[in-house]
Length: 277
Ligand code: NAP
Image 1: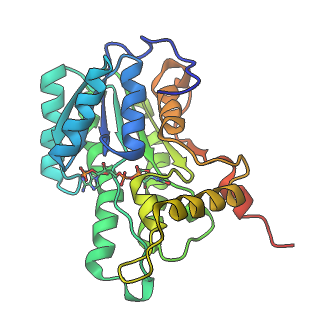
Image 2: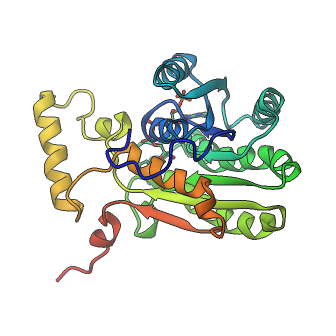
């Protein structure tokens, strides 16, 4: 729940949105925020146990949610998922492309499989899902697509050639589809979160197997020290920070916004991009 709710409770009532990777981390923050505003959220990812826990939590809090299992790399399954959601609800108002895979790896030894896996989830998956909802949004007179990008490709980020290349592709896709599908009333935007300490990010701060393992306190302290130095607004982001922007783009307030990429990062990438003095 956002500490500073600004939207009315029924802002998105009667609408249906799919959030890929919507059961964990940032995706869960997005799903929860949308459900709090009355949208029926369909959480879509691979692991039924994560999906069930997230749906149960949203429903227990008074929201409307359901789950579909899907691997976004599987185009046929993605198309079937979109049909299932439309058959069940009669509409698809919003798609949030949030599912992604990522890990640190040296480019010189990155295997073809590792490269392919991240590109397929982040970029192909985003395209497959977006293409799959198109006919339903078109038939409904419009819809919104919001894809989760990042800022690391604005400046280059060692050990993440795969993810940065994929997200650069997501940005390009966002702009192209915004223009191509505007005539159908479909708005296509992206959000670029800064550092949000999800489990994945916490793991990046954890030493690899074999290295000395700090206790939990020292991992937290290392993360806190990093955030204070690297983020001008001097705090980590939260999944709800991101959820609030998606809610805005899903709402009528965003009616004249398409093809835009919104950075939500406490000023982190700008500060990092300052020339050394
Ligand atoms: P996360 O907790 O690891 O979430 C990734 C989600 O994607 C999981 O729910 C996972 O669910 C789903 N997923 C992975 N592969 C999938 C596949 N093949 N098919 C369907 N679903 C799949 O990550 P996060 O940190 O919240 O990141 C969410 C988004 O924000 C990503 O797009 C990421 O690139 C972006 N982002 C994050 C940060 C950050 O600091 N955290 C910063 C910038 C951008 P299953 O395992 O159940 O499939």
